[in-house]
Length: 90
Image (cartoon, rainbow, N blue to C red):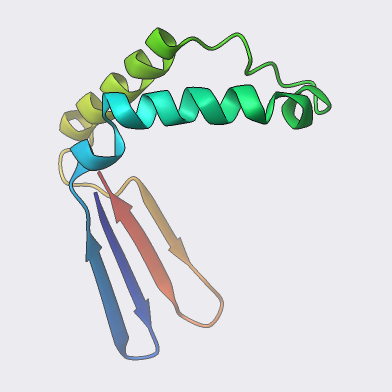
């Protein structure tokens, strides 16, 4: 994953290995966070408590595979009114 920010002549690039975010340990942490925060999500009619560890792992695998589909295009590209640009690549 690469995050690039251009703001008023200053540039910030952050490179993080995609596997660092989307791995089995991260899936376990996400499952724990969903279980702990279940009440706040249930109040907004979003049922995340039905997600299993296996479902989260499948989601992470799909995110990693989507990198091939994007073929070098940014996942997110945003430009503010001030001319600041934020781009995120997988």
